[in-house]
Structure formats: C-alpha cells, structure tokens
Amino acid sequence: DQQVKQNSPSLSVQEGRISILNCDYTNSMFDYFLWYKKYPAEGPTFLISISSIKDKNEDGRFTVFLNKSAKHLSLHIVPSQPGDSAVYFCAALKQGGSEKLVFGKGTKLTVNP
Amino acid sequence: KAGVTQTPRYLIKTRGQQVTLSCSPISGHRSVSWYQQTPGQGLQFLFEYFSETQRNKGNFPGRFSGRQFSNSRSEMNVSTLELGDSALYLCASSLVRNTDTQYFGPGTRLTVL
Image (cartoon, rainbow over all chains, first blue to last red; front, side, top):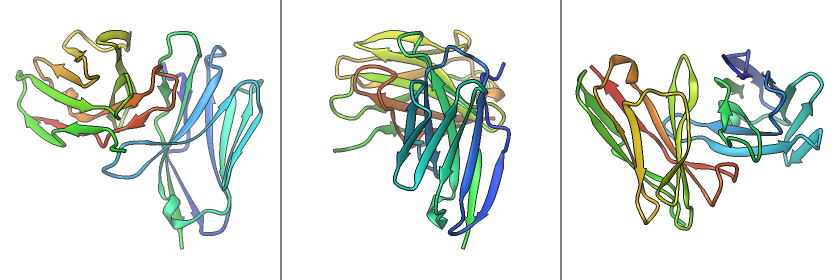
C-alpha cells in the first residue's frame, strides 16, 4: 500500500507565480517529513524538512506546511523559477522507529518562462 | 568535498544473469542506503548498511542483497535478474543514521533484456 501519496503526477506554472506541491500520508506514526528535488540523470537532492512538532518550515523561496490532522503536507515555491523544473518527491519516516524513508511517487514540476 | 559516486552509471544485462553495483559514500558518512526507482513505483527503499551491518531492510526478495566494507563503501547485488528489475538504482549516504540528511548519488541505470 502507498503510505505516502503524491496524487498529482505533474504540475505546470508560470515563472514568478507560486507552485504548490501536495503530499498525503496514511501512517499516523510518521513524525518527520522531507522534500527532495530530482533533475534528470541526477540523484535526488534534499530540499527542506519538517518535524511533526511544527506546522511550518521556511527556507528562502521554499516553505513546507504540515497539517497533521489531515495527514497532509505541501511545498510552496515562491516565486517559481524555470530552474525549479524538476521532479519533487515527498518522503516520510518515524524517527527512532524502523527509520526507513518512505517516498511518494513524485510530482513533475514545469515552470514556464 | 566529493559527493556520492556510483559505478557503473549504465548497465545492460539479460534475464538470469547477476549484477553488482557499487557505491562510494561521502567521506565521513557511515550510513549507506539503497533505493530502486521505477516509473510505476517511485523510490522504494531496499536496505541500509551501517558499520558493515545491514540495519534496515525493505520489502524486496532475497535476490537483492548488499554489503558494506570497512571504508563504508557499499555494493549491491541482484541475482537471477528479471525484466522487472530494470530500474534506476540509487545509493544515498548519511552521517550516522538513515534519518540524517541523505545525499544521493546519480544512480545506476540497469536495463534487463
């Protein structure tokens, strides 16, 4: 079963606008969440993370929001740039547990100039 | 400092053969994890090694195995290859724990004919 779901396989936005990537999880034991970005022919690169004790974490143009009651997190990119075009993976784990990172299937973001 | 390196980058094998993939982690990193990426399943955790011991394991058949050497370098082996094993195999290293930020290599693209 898919414990981490990214229901939008792709997203297209205009340069300068906001990109919102969504992620849902089913396992309420997850308490740490991460976003990775992947360009073609490269490995994923860590972007930003959030612990379940927070509901928001910000790093420059990237902000992750966590809604624990809805088991939902989102990544906001403002403003979006063409260089942000990549596949974005959401991942989750339970700290101190099996410590296996569980990934979603990814969302391909295209930022049009 | 140098990133995670994986060799070879591309590999073509036929069904029934076996294959060995290699991963050199970032200097000082002691945890090495392996992932399989396919279009249909996204990134799936294979296993994690730390101090030459397998610490965590995903839900893959016993044909998938690995090991870690004293210098933290890791190898992954797949025996009796099947068509469905065609995928991008990614290695990630982290300082100590799988929950530390993971740094991914570029991956090995395996094609099974």
